[in-house]
Length: 325
Image (cartoon, rainbow, N blue to C red; front, side, top):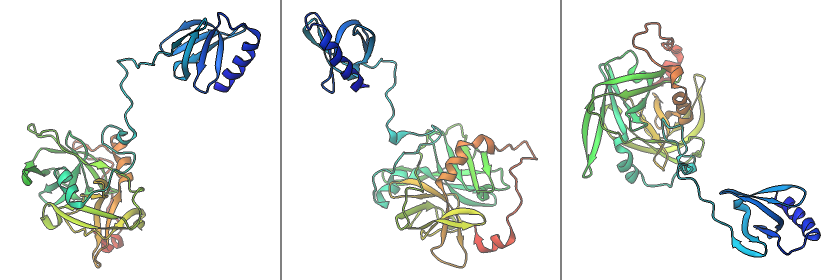
């Protein structure tokens, strides 16, 4: 577009006298000669003899009217226009998902930062883990942690002066479930619930095989247990689904808890291990979790509907024998 302006200005300057001519100087050292018809906040209209050109302000370095130069005014954004969000903050709004991993840190420092966002999920039939995804108290866990249960409580660990204090919330609602992929979305609805600290959802695709990862959860009921390992593979197929395989120790009670990268972002939900081996833990990739959350209305759970379509059949028996949830 600027090249077109330069060609036009060269032609016009040969046919018009310089005296009394308005000149618009462009950023690429080209200029346009003619008569300025109007000047607006974001553009200038100039008559070049046989047509009128509209020049964006951000391409203009100087305006000379009748031989007298005047600097091009700076473009000022309207006050009612919100500044564009940086790419790192881009997200659908229901959860926060940075566009690229943040700076790496140590497990010790990260646990201090995100420890309050990891919770223990309790039911009359057992317990598991979970993690909060926004300040309103929505949290993710595994479906098998709350399967067949309606009395659900969540225990948080509030940090104060370097110490964690447990706090239990008993008014917890099931929002959405997907038994096929073992995911459940819950919400804490206690009247005295504050704004919660939450985790960032990262990208499993951005984590390379061999990179360090760590988990926080309640294996065998031992709350706030931190385990560390590496990502063994990102494409382990089990029962028709792809899982992240990790050497991070996963045990009953870790189910539903977060698997973090070294930036403190969730890259998966820990959900099972091989019973006859060590260092063979598995997690649901966070990309599947994001899809579930983005389409949570399609997976909505209704306690009043006994024909809820998301109460599926049990998996094949050979699958249940091969893995332990």
